[in-house]
Image (cartoon, rainbow, N blue to C red; front, side, top):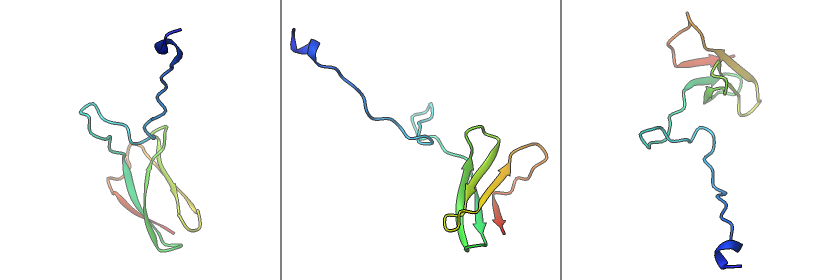
Length: 83
């Protein structure tokens, strides 16, 4: 057996979700909205879910969930407050 036959090459590097490159070779930009969680006075970004139907996230301190549905007749606002 030659040395070429005994070696197997495996690529163990993969891009995390949301870090994929666009067709232009630049990192793809993830859609987000800003949320101020008044419960803990913290501002964070929340991102579109995998289905593309809503922005979903939670307060990083108390884990209070928030979900903003995406649909027609919505708003163009990019910043919100959660109580």
